[in-house]
Image 1: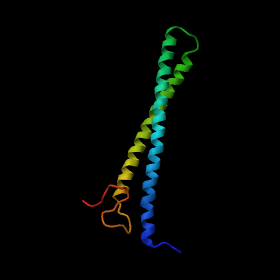
Image 2: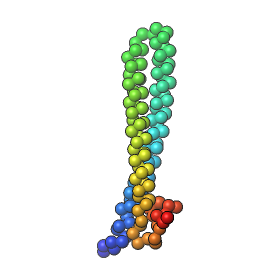
Image 3: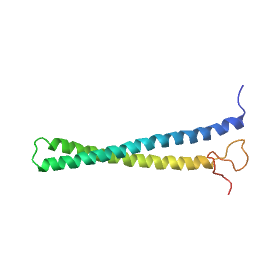
Image 4: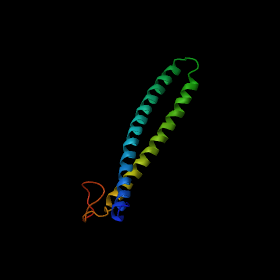
Length: 116
């Protein structure tokens, strides 16, 4: 038995809201781990710079590798922030969509209303 058109129409915006929420939570975890990784790379990099100053052999390749890793982590962090901003905009747009079959002023996000 097919669902009435009014029930199916509300499922898409709700699915979008759930998807964006789950994606944001996942990306928040990734961003936190990237920040922790960045802090560890910074710590290790400073230790290697101190070791290089004390003339320990074969530190230069490790230092160069860490500098490259630091740049990559910074680029990933910047990308994550951009994606989080985009998801926030999508959630804002999704919350403004009225739910099919719902009373006037109902929206996807609880607590938000499309009624001015």
